[in-house]
Image 1: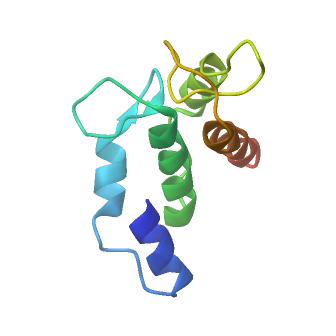
Image 2: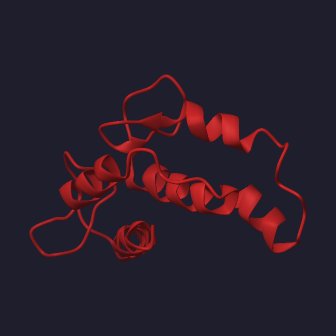
Length: 108
């Protein structure tokens, strides 16, 4: 995601790099996106990156509901967000990712 994002900022043509195939291989219904094709574990940074990459490539997020549910499950009792839904403490970095991801999904 970050590499494609930087290339797009430089007006480099990102079509044809294979990022769309990789993104499709990382789509997963329960969380929206995983970090590696063929796995089931996801972290907040994978979901955030998948949403950003989808926007760069001009694709709708296929499992937007799964993304929203996963992100909400990452919210901790103190209101912040941790990197995973099953444990962890909230951090400013992950809270920023969660809020940004939810805002991007709201624009679809």
